[in-house]
Length: 195
Figure 1 (tube, rainbow, N blue to C red):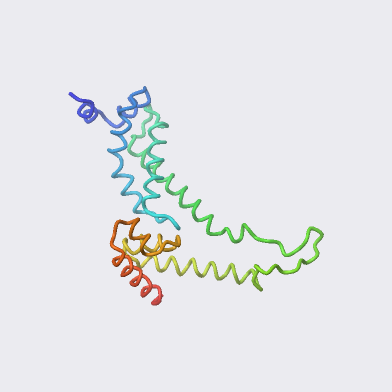
Figure 2: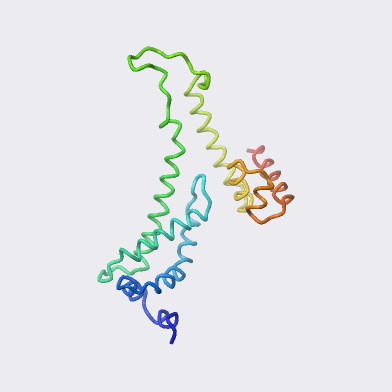
């Protein structure tokens, strides 16, 4: 009997115990077994400025942590413990991503000197910093509404387009014909105009 057949005969708790006891080969088996759970859980969440693959990667990190941290003497099944760890890791990534959208508030430039005297307005600052923040928040709202109506392919193309890639670079990244990407961008622009 080869190792894979042997592993299929064991419970998840026994598999994890073997890994914790030093059987490194069992790690790949556990990860393959639990990857469908990670994929399923990743569909419940949305990562601002990221892709589903980012959430899947975070979920796999959570799974790896669960494998190392699971207490084999616990009454909780490994499945439920792993599911909790996977979800928590994805939620942490989402919360970290959401904090970044508030960076205009966290990276402000003071209009006053250390002694409280007003500085001359730098050329790069607009007339009203509050307007900049309000406009940025409105743009985030529009982007979220647009993402909600995009197909999975359109969403992928949109995310890459927002990274300042042109349609040829996007096509190369996604392994698609440039004309397909150009057509997809046109559909995205039509949907954006309707919003």
